[in-house]
Figure (cartoon, rainbow, N blue to C red):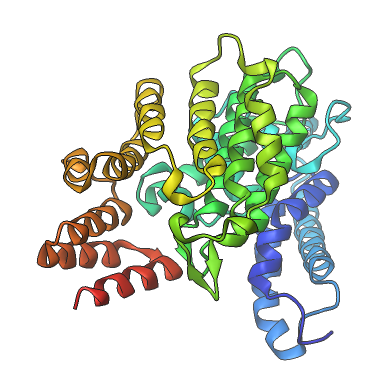
Length: 413
């Protein structure tokens, strides 16, 4: 062991989904696997600060979790032998069927297999995505709640119900055959989109972005696109995520947030921008598309306006507003309306931006208040801007964003 390895939080964030998949493939018991892995993490939180981070942190967690699963199975076996007359063969078969594993001939990727399992039609799409984000991608429940605009307790209950439904309904750790795979793609795409968003803009914690999570979401999209290469939803989603992810190195400087306007554009990953632009002009998006595909494509075209502008001052805000107007017709959401208000302020002036914000609130989100504070500050309404910053700071759960808001408020004097 040594003391210079990655922190436990980093290991859990990066390895959780893979470890769940490996354990589930071996033991076929979703209920045992997640509990055992949680126990292993708890044990690591006590052991590693004393003994140092092991040379192979993920392997340490895997070994500890495997031992706990085996302990639980031995305990269950002892209890079962004590009740031989009460446990019928049929019950034994039912228990095994709860977590059976298929051959997985269609998909080799363990993470995708888990996401597809969660996308089973027995679960509502939102519940399936929430479960995937927590179980497979390791996104904190608080962040998932913010993505779905619901209280954390509500989301925790929703995830618990989804897990019980998977175990109770005997949903297999399996990949559907090709005939039903298209029916699950929208849920998988939504899961990847939300996972990317959780990495691109974490709602809580010390990081402004979690590039590894965003990158894993993009990898997942690529894997599914490999199975469905002409699927417009996946093509548009890959373009969107690549364009956003291309700015990762320029969004943070010395641990502080750098606004899009102030970013060093030479640090953007222009190869990813070029790939995204090719996807947007490819044949997959030339015909009729679903509302979900249209939503991703429109968001990608907005991102492309920023990616192709030589400087921030050259941004075609009129076109950005136009894309947002279309997006709100296809997929109206408070987040899209908020982003449109920002674009309107840049294109038509501060007063127009404030007017576009009228009546807009997003539960448990600091962003409407933060945008309002910035526009009020530009309009010279310092007292109102301070009040809005106070509201935004109180609601912000991300450390870097909150520090930025506090600086902005302090600058008002």
